[in-house]
Length: 128
Image (cartoon, rainbow, N blue to C red; front, side):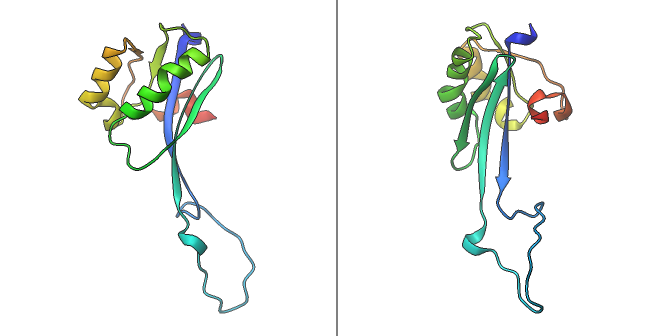
């Protein structure tokens, strides 16, 4: 059964974000600046025991997961040769538990792994 699980998650990568630490040499009194406004990128990806699935950029806000699922989930499972009876893992983020997302999964006969709340440490994709 483990070999049929397709693990997924999304992440935000910030350029010069608040969590990033930068070491640079500056002349005394120089005011630090960020050129071109920094910025960030949102990504969605998945993998299974068979390898990595698609890694896609999320443009704009991801309020419901429908576009990502529709364009990438089934194709990733097929690319990884999981067949149509794979088990999909996603966390309990509101965009995943939204009615429209649940309906899409049901309409496309996707088996979803039940997932406990507040448990990112259990998701294998978090350890990549």
